[in-house]
Image (cartoon, rainbow, N blue to C red; front, side, top):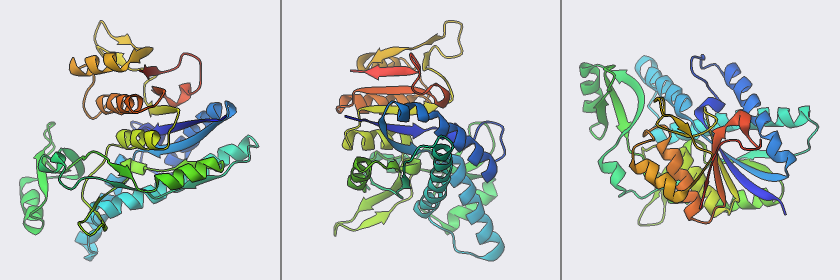
Length: 314
């Protein structure tokens, strides 16, 4: 019986440090990342792919901001910007993965699902938004924007670059099309889903879905999907071959295999930074604690190779 793996692409799967944000560069990077998944296909895995969208949705927000200032085009809310990014990133992954499959004469279909993820409108994260999005602003610019949008929250950049809008990062509760993902996988499709953590939506008292300004952690959303479709393994791709403790210190140590208990201990001791490795560790813990067999955190180039990555197990 084929194993099912969910793979969460890191930001460097599309853009890497120092690169220009051109579509052509993103195509090259996506092709390389998809090519690294061939090792899993050779081992007869079913594949589901999640991905980040930080730089891409940031660009979309800049375009929306410029359109409003220069041409009076009404601003798009953040959930629409997220949906926009899911569509074009999914297109890039579909296209380049198909090019990889054709290069190696593999007959397999790939499909992208624009995915809504349900959150709780009363999640405590909405009381303390922390996720920065969009441009940096001066005091005057921030005050002008806040006059037009009283519900917006801003925070000073710790590096002194000015003010940025911050939004909540609520816990994902339910992936809206997870049954469709399971069905497509059973028919042999490679499926792209929960892009950028999914489009955040909430249910009204009438049961209607409505978008909400938030950013869901893509690793946690991918982990939730992996649990709900009963994936055997969950891969989190990043820009390092293994997770380290005492990172960038004289006593730095890379981790081969750790238990959930050890992962929780390292988190509590502050070995992993927020906005970087800490959310990945939490996503791995969630997967294992909810029935997953193994979570592997590694770089794309090491996928499927013996002794690659850091393995989180029960």
